[in-house]
Image 1: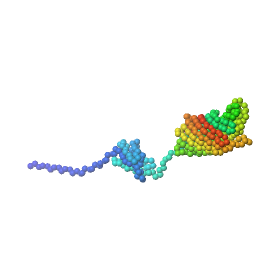
Image 2: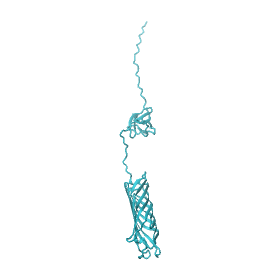
Image 3: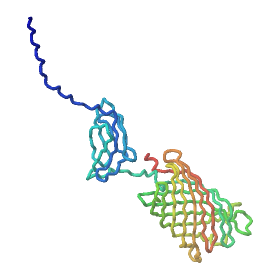
Image 4: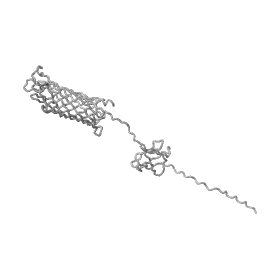
Length: 342
């Protein structure tokens, strides 16, 4: 019989090596950013893929969710003001990212200076033309009517929290003397000036300032003893006005300034002078028992850079041995030097 050749034995092979399973790169990253010291969630932390603009801010509970851009890998950069930044690899499961506070951190405060033009009470200068409704009485000298030929220069200068204010005005007052045939009988040149210094306090907002301080006022009446009808000298009025009185008042002024917008300034003020001295010519008895009170409001608007128009109203009252009250209406130019800086 034919012999059958033996089968070749099967080769013995080693067990197949196990392949390493590489997890798929996550397509998004999500989690919570917390303070490592307190454990509290951190709002507004910035989570971004380095080298890209693909980032998000955490919400009020410190949570974030970011769709990853595969071009920038899976690294994340997490940062927050006053904390150490951290870079880590995104994971598929929710992450808890802990940031450590910077030990020597001091918040940066930019050096800012308030524009002087934005202060409620600021440097300002005015030139006014005035109308005045005057009511004056002393002896048989009477005045009651409208005066329209007045000029006033007014200014205030602020340096820091200190304010210096001054004004000067001039007008001619027609005077009616009882029993005299010419009306008005005489005219008087009246010169008046105020000077004060105040300390300015802010009322918690740049819109409102208040200033308070001492104030001095002088009022001088100089007679013009000529008739309005014949321009000839006439007898004196036989009142204290014949003696060119000089009134001086000493007291305080309170000023409230309001600036709703940069170009508009609104102010209200009041003055009270408990000490008033009235001097007349030598040999004449002085007038005593006098006081002075006044209140006013004004508004200035700059139509151009630093230059605008101002309007004002002021009531004043000299009272005591004489009666002298007036309502003043003013309109004129205003100049705000602080606006020139803008």
